[in-house]
Structure formats: structure tokens, C-alpha cells
Image (cartoon, rainbow, N blue to C red; front, top):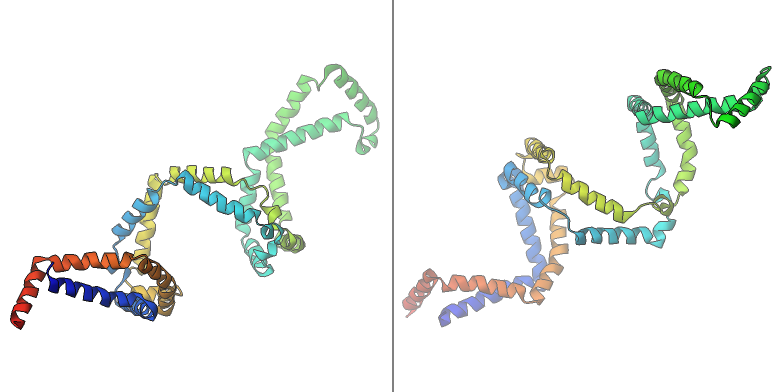
Length: 340
């Protein structure tokens, strides 16, 4: 590189480096942030990126990402630190949910009886519930037949029958197989009706007034319930491992790819053509917010890069490429020749 070119390079380098120091850096960042906001006032999201580019980025950087053990361990470490924090252990639940939010949640439940009925039906019509109900009814019948209880004592001659039943069970070890099969067959035929009846009873019991009253009774205990008690059974290692397994399974499915494409396309159809800055305002993000955060984050970051010499090295390399270019050398020689 010739002496004039090197002198120009150093002069230009020092000129730009002034923008990365002291008050000039803050001013520079503010000017650039507002200039970018000016650009966003005139162009849309679709002008910046197409739907296919956004979808491809998500597929490359999110769906293709498999969390490493180190990443999982870091997440577990942070969660466990938070859970083991003494202040967390003793914080009351009202720090997370206040009465206003709690009342709104109860109101939403009260206002959706169809959802409540669907949840009750799904729970009480499941094979698990009917099997448990069948076992409970069966053992209740057996217990009634073999126990001298207050109700049985009011029935003339029942105590004698109970004594006979006990003697039989003492010799046999259980009800006669024929009787047992008959009871179970009866339950099998009628348990669906019993379950449906219990569903009707529960739906009637959980009416709007009952839910509201119960919620009022629960709140004093809930608001004082300590977070440490609520999270003491969390097993973060196992949960994190399960979460990674689930993510690695679902991220590779066609379903996830279809969902991503559908959501991105729907968003672009809704907001892709409006000016980007206008959409940000609708989201509650003003240009002064953007400029403020660019300065707040950019200033310490640029200072660190500048102090390490990184910015000077990168600028010098790019300027050197410019001044070493044949076209630049020819231009400098022509300018020197004209001056001479």
C-alpha cells in the first residue's frame, strides 16, 4: 500500500473510531436507531422478509435444534436455584395470583358451563373411573353383607344372617364364587348407569353458586399457601429429560411443520403488508422505546468491543481491502498526478 493510501486509511479509521467513544457513541447509536425506525415507517414486514424465508429460518434454527445435555443441565441448575431460594420457599401464593386475578379465573369457569360439563363427562365416563367405581360398589356390597352395622341392626333377623356370612367366610376365605360372579355381573351391566347418575349429581352439585361459594372459602387458604409447598414435589431432572425427549420427537413431525407454515402465513395475511413501525405501535412498542434500548444495550457492548480492539481491527481490515483495490490505487494516483 502506498504512503498516500496508508495515510488516508489511518485518517478514515480514526474518524470512524471517534463515533465509538464517549458521548459520541451514545449520539451515534441514537441516530442510527431513529434512522432504522424511519425506514420501518415506510416498509412492511413483507418487504423485509418473505413468508418462505421466515418459515425456513424457523425450520433451520428452531425445529432443527436438538437441546444438548449441557443446555438442559444449565436450565435445571437455574430452576433448582430459584426453587431452593429461601425467599421462594416462604413466599405466599398471593405473590403470583392476587384476588382480582383469582376472581376473574373463577368467573371464567362459572361463565362456561358447557366446558365444565364436558370435563365432568370426560372424567366420569372414562374406563378408569368406571373400573374404580365398580370396585368401590362391589366392596361396599361385600362389606355390607359381612359387617354388623347400625343399619343392619334395624332389620329383623339381619344380625343372624351376618353371623352366618362370617362363619361361611371364615371357612371359605371369600364369598361363594357363584355369589361373587353374580354381583360382578350385575355391576358390569349397571355400572354405566351408575356412572352417568354420579355425573348428573356432580354436575348439579357444581352449579354456578356452589363454585363461587367454594372459591371464596378456598381463597384465604390459597393466598397464604407458600410457594415452597406448591413446588416441593417438582423433580426438575426428570421433567427436563422428559421435555427434551418430547421436543425431539414433536419437532420432527409433519404436524409441527404444517403448524409453523399455517401460523406464519396467517400472520403475514393479517399484518404483513402494513408498515412495520405501525404494527409495532399496535403492539405497544414506540420508536423512543427502540432507541432507548438500542442505546442501553449497545453502549456497554460497543465499549467492550472497542476496548478489546475488535472494532479497530475489523474496520482496518475492511478499509485495507478498499485501499488495496486496483480501482482505488488508480484513483489515488490520478489525484496525486493532478495535484502535481
